[in-house]
Image 1 (cartoon, one colour):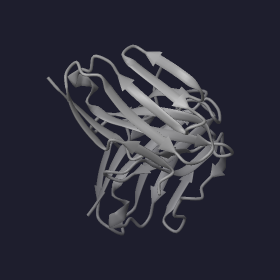
Image 2 (cartoon, each protein chain N blue to C red):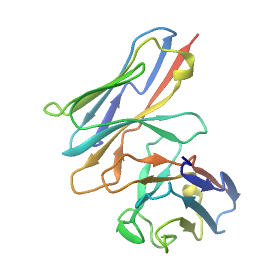
Image 3 (cartoon, each protein chain N blue to C red):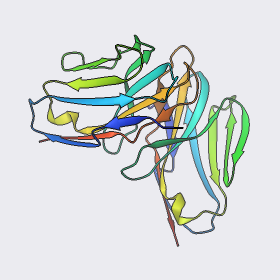
Length: 113
Length: 109
């Protein structure tokens, strides 16, 4: 069974540039999460989707971050414009349904210079 | 105070030792998760539990709901167990996990 796929694995940009990350969850998983993990800290939830609807985006900095899951399958997370403090690993996870076991992707490591 | 606290933050042990990592939480939960993260790698779910004890190979996870405490044990530790072990909780009414800061484990040969 294929796992959660993320791309790119690594991205280096300068501040004020934009970046987009892509996630393809495990087939059939209705719930998709984006987490931000800053070095030395635990992951922080940015947004949770249930199919193509947003369940929780309370911690998403909406002035610069956006995410979508238009067809309820894969998802993109965009940052525009990026700030130095956005340097982190962006983790995508999916689960069969809400409250079920999470499966994580390898993450996308962003460095903002 | 963080809602999920882990101890120790760092642990170095010799191969073969019995390892215990502790997790305490201060909120109501629907489930507790133990996760493993290797350097530069993604996160792997080890256990998801809401009561009692679970065992998988050399790993054992226990939870005491009344005391709001969980432990992860590794028996006969091996250098390949070296990783960051993260405790996370699912809170009632919210699905997204609340994570501890992780325990950085190094097993020396």
